[in-house]
Image (tube, rainbow, N blue to C red; front, top):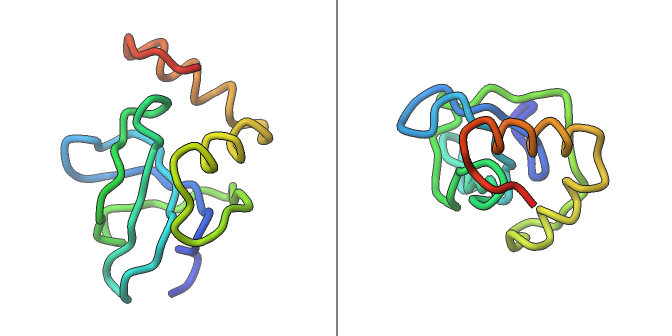
Length: 97
């Protein structure tokens, strides 16, 4: 699979959520993964995504496969990138806790 792995932070480059960051929560097969934002933080809802539509970032959080949004959010809060995600959400007019 390469650098696309559970817990990897990525940027979507296609679709209505293009440009937003997301986290890989499950590998479905060689072409598709399940991602989440979580929605309340980045605006990306939990969904299946083509790996060709994702650009992996050097940040990887420690979550279990299939982790729920609450677990992903708690893991993101422990990283330095969390503040950046909150600022992006506020700039879009979203909340960001």
